[in-house]
Structure formats: C-alpha cells, structure tokens
Length: 297
Image 1 (cartoon, rainbow, N blue to C red):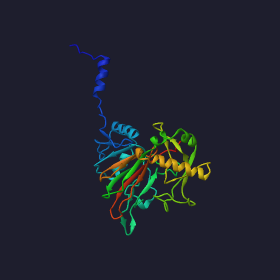
Image 2: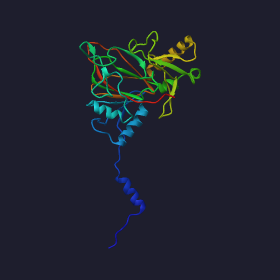
Image 3: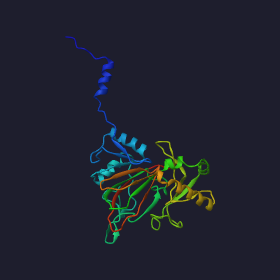
C-alpha cells in the first residue's frame, strides 16, 4: 500500500491552520482626543501572550485603556499591570493595600485619619512622579467605591498638545528642560506658592519622546512643573502658563465618570490627568498601581 505524502506547501498550510487564531479586541473610542474601552476581556484569569500583545497595541494607540465591570482582587490588578511592565512598590506604607504594589486612593477615614492618599477634592493636571529621575511609565486605578457626583478624572493628550503648538513656541522650548517638584505635605493637589527646601525635584525635557512610539509629547504640568531652566523667572512663568493653558484645552481632554468595577490605565509618558471636586460626605476608594518607567529623553 502506498502512503500519500503531503507536499511542503501543504504541510506549511497545515501547520499554520493548527495554530490558534486570536481575534482582534473589541474596542470603543472614549473620545475624539484619546481613550479606548476594551469590551471583551475579563481580567480575573491570566491573559494569553497574544491578547497581552493586542492590549499593548491598543494602549499605544489610545493612550488610556478602560475595562468596565471587573471584579478583581489586588493580585488580579497587579497581574494585569505586569502585562505592561514591572509594578513599583508603594512609597507611603500607611496607604498600602494588602499587596505592596497597591496604593489606596481614598477619603475614607479610620480613627480620624484617611486610609489612603490624596483623599479630598480637586487635583490639578499633572503626570505621575515627574519629580524623580525615572517617572512611572503607567498608572492604573481600580474603582471600588465612587461618589454619586464628582471625583471624575480628566485625561489630556500630550501628543496633541505638542503637535498643535505654534512653530514659534516649539522653537522656544526645543531642547530645554524644566524643574518638576512635588510638595506632598503642603501642595499635593493644588499648585503651591513657593518651593520648600527638601521637596523632591528633578529636571526633565519640556518635550519628551515616547520610547515605544517615537512621538513627541509636551511634558510639563500645572501642578508640579516649577520653572524652565536657564530662563529669567518672568519669562519662564509666562511660557509655562501659556503651555499649561494650551494643553488643558477641552479638545485634548477625555473626562472619565467612574463606575464601580472600572479599571483604567494611562500612559504617563504622553498624558496628563486631573481630578474634579467631590463631596467629602461621600466615600471614594480606588486601588492604584504604577509601572516602572525610564528616564525621559
């Protein structure tokens, strides 16, 4: 009896057809400026590498990713963060969840003291950890309790903010660095009036290049950027205020109204975020995880 043998071409197609095909993610844009909602991923189980790769592509495209109706433990949230890079350990141990990479953002008080960081009110636009040498590459929040009104998070597209600057302003900031500082004790949510001694600070490019996409983003912010180096104070203040007003235009912004079960992750290298005010009489509890980043260039 003769056994028929497949040709090399037939064998090739047989091998290809046997591999599982991962369909495209189901997504929905959150706004014209930025943001993608992922509609078909459950984060309670480990994700296949192909799905992680698609999520990373969607993240680079949308700058922020939203997944709703998630029921997660802290370990689930950290495992999701690890799809995008190594999570950082929280610095303030008093605000740490059960997992060392989880920080509580909350106004809930126990024995008269908040159980979490940044408990109350409005918070101006900023990028996380821009006052250290290697700021976070990404941050994510998981909503456990939310107020009925307010406490929204606004996200601004720093790519578009840079790309729409007048050519003359681009020329003025080209190659320059700015000093970023964060006075957590006295000006954690609203810009302070002076820079105290000992407050952590670091200088970074006014315009940074994203290491994965190669796109340029405007990397200053109203809350933490103090001055542009090598400029007289009056000129630095004038230029920074112009940049702040420009990047905070509504056309660059998506405003997120939180629901319980939302998990939202943003690329800290090309977005800014802020928080709207909310009643101190209502509880707000978020779990935050940040992902280690690189020195901006």
